[in-house]
Image (cartoon, rainbow, N blue to C red; front, side):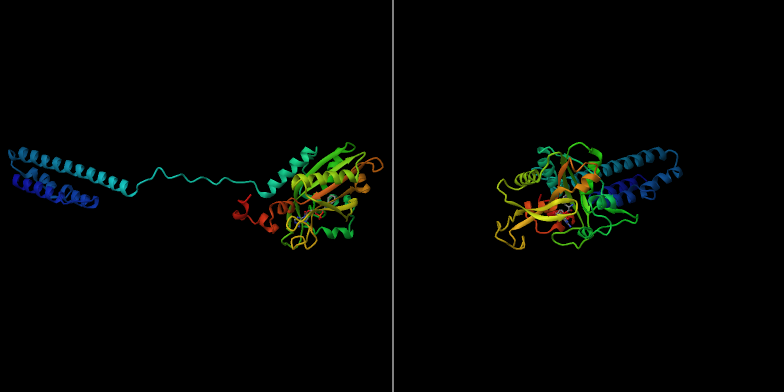
Length: 341
Ligand code: FA5
């Protein structure tokens, strides 16, 4: 039996010397130290040995078992160290490489332009006033001097809701009524920014949703000259100090007289090109003196008070400032467009 143990130990150590990876080591463990291995069978047979033989063989069998177990542990540790060294070699990390910087978010170009508009008008003493995007037909049209079936309503193709008389505002002008009714008879100088909606054919210059910034000033001595001065100054601050502007007679039912303001085309410097349709000018807003009926609807006596109002499109202004040739980029959520601002 002692001889058999020598053979088992010798044979096991011999096979172990050829083991080179974890899988082979596990196979070696099963055949050498597993439940049905020759070594374990020696333990099973101990009971059938002569009494005096038993301690000697038992001790020797335990020695062989401990020896093999410690060799197993040594080799297992050695294989682990080798694997780690290999990984360190092949998966080497270059800690001197510069890190990848995170791309920070930016403000949408419309928000940037809106903030610039607020800053310019704030310097001129205008307060920002917000009003709702879902409006009544009464505020959006009737109180602005456009009763039912008034032909001028065609200028604002409207998204109606299922509730009768409730619509998505087509412009920020209904805000004029809300501010006047809140402030009458105090003087007013406010701007009203916000999203507007129109049921129209989308094109390079027209979206179905866009921002507007309405302006309203009401007081006892306000003239068309104040309107021209304010808007000309605005254009100089928004574009360049030498930008050329012009006022063209126009028509809006809620202002009288009414006008539109153009700035000289930035591309052709007034010579005429396809951006300005050959005119040399680009329209940026509608404006005029608040119509007496609208003043009265807002709670102001038109015999005593006058006022001016204007409405501009920030996306159109951004298009001019940044030379963007299509308004559809604004809401297309294309990161290549947005990250340029
Ligand atoms: C109006 O909406 C008037 N409420 C403006 C006004 C206010 C006049 C106060 C007098 C007194 P208009 O439809 O022209 O007017 O629109 C004003 C501006 O909004 C335009 O100059 C343009 O810059 C912008 N705008 C109008 N329609 C669109 C559209 N579909 N897409 C993008 N911008 C638009």
